[in-house]
Length: 355
Ligand code: CP3
Image 1 (cartoon, rainbow, N blue to C red):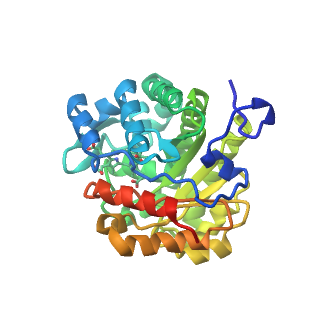
Image 2 (tube, rainbow, N blue to C red):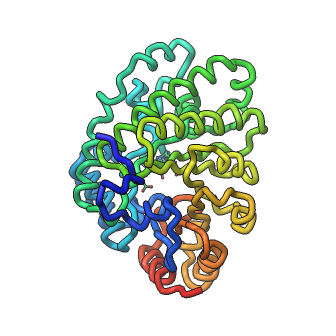
């Protein structure tokens, strides 16, 4: 079954989130938050303790769906984001993945040239089918007026973890690999593109209304490198999704790319771009093409601080984007120390704000 969000025949009421991609501007923008499910919520910590490890939770459709819905229920948000992780793809390709408490992810063995053929042949759905079940369960529970966002890591960001065996400690090592072993790095990016397209299409077919690609480590790359490992691969993925499932919005979040963000905004198949907390929102307002929906921007640490500074900053985004389609969100994910009361206060502030 394919979905066409622009199909007037479908007769379904669209969520406010999806209507924004059709050009809708409302007095209160739709709102969701990156990392809206997670350790800052007591109900997440409780369920996570029952599930066992973080990965057990990701592969348990019942519990993962419940965790996906928790923040939507608590704060009445306009969209849910699938509870999963960008590192499930390397795991589905055959790398061993573990999350070490307090240290973060570990992938082993690190990838080398000889792995690429094996990766190409892998059927990622064998490992990832519980994720599609989570999507289906969650969409059934959300109904039509709230959107479900599927996601994947961008090839470059996922590759950095695969090559370093965890969070990269020294970006210079990978940049050097890109120059010295160019065919291998581009081969890895290509396989990741192919598998990511398959993964996202399966999420859409299971019920995801839109998809987002996280390129957390796109920052600090020279222009030609950024173009090769981030801009072009994301363009390719978005294009393939558009061809296979027209009408499903694709949002790109290349973090820390500064003014290079306009190159992503210009991509024909990109429907939305996430702006990070370091990006000047007035620059984004002026330089991103009007066709593209801007999402986010607010520094997640302001939600840890709360109060007037948080509200003043939120107002900046609401004012700047009041007359264009805009999605209220953060400029990166919530950190575990975020007080849920501050999130509730932020939601209330955005909903009651009248320019
Ligand atoms: O946003 C959401 O609420 C949806 C779920 C989601 C998670 N990770 C859950 C998660 C999403 C979209 C991600 C994306 C992700 N994962 C990114 C890109 C966005 C970003 O944050 O930069 C990256 C780089 C990862 C890789 C990853 N996952 C790391 C480095 C870590 C360890 C650091 C940490 O915060 O513990 C994770 C773990 C992770 N992913 C948790 C959650 C809720 C914490 C797991 C737990 O201990 O319960």
